[in-house]
Image (cartoon, rainbow, N blue to C red; front, side):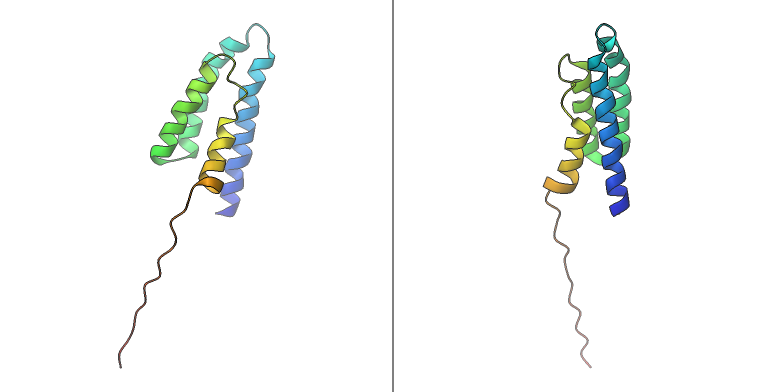
Length: 100
């Protein structure tokens, strides 16, 4: 589990860097965002399952498609939300007594 967690972080940082790199290309950068946005949304949905992954994929799509928002590290923020900020439910212990 721990290895998978940091694999997601590495992938997310790489995807964030690729998304930000399109901003550095003066004329064709915005056009590359049109291609990158659906790919990034698909990757976000693949990396994080369930409703949270679907919501995050919409956010990453909008962040990549809108001008001047490429600096937001959406994949890294989703990783932080999933593994650092989100409250995990406390494991429940069930006591079993055996009467002899």
